Length: 338
Image 1: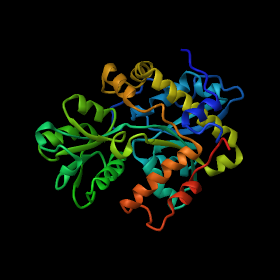
Image 2 (image 1 turned 90 degrees about the horizontal axis):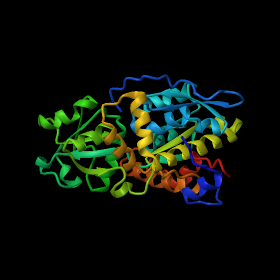
Image 3 (image 1 turned 45 degrees about the vertical axis):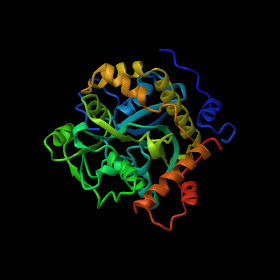
């Protein structure tokens, strides 16, 4: 494999600020606890990731193919399910120095004092709001009075699409009913009439769409267009004691995601070989190619997206109405290139 050179200058230019400084049925056939590259003088960091979320596939790829090592890092991947609570627990208990998760999932804990700084976005997309052609639902507004199937009431997809519903003029808690089903049975719940729509994450959501479901929205459309989905959070203590390591992590994460944007087939084949997900190579390649892996804002670009996300959660009454979005965005983020 030949990976492209990805310098700090390239990262800043890609971010648009040059000079400004899922329940998947995985049968893991490899151990990803340690990097394949020799440790040598590499700085070891523990990074929380969701092995079952195919959008995180670039992280294992970067670890095992030496991209992180090229940036001086020995990355130990610490697995969590799609639940953001598990991600926070890994960090709070010292089992991870940093983690990657849904932007909305970070904000309430940070408002409550969780000691993490957001340092970079990773990609856009990976969650979908689906229905059937027979449902009569042609628009998000048509979901009023309907039941939406989710894998958990704390599902990242629910956290994302309550915003979509609210921006469409619906009350996401009063105008729709959220009902929990196992992730791989969500489509069955709809076919049996127990729900009329699905809010879920890839690769299962992508598979449901390929099986005939209609996509009403994703977190790349409408209000989410041109916005980051997941972000990197690093402990404030790590930033204080070893900012260069966090900067190296941001550069490496950006490089491997940019590489994925250019070579989705390669990452798809690697991920299939490593984890045996219930999705075909062709569908996984198409799914990875559909994500905005080229979008990984840092610095001021990240702060602007944080402001929008903060305003979103104020709209649905998750964050305090008195919160100053710009000041809060500055408080919870850090520009590792400043």
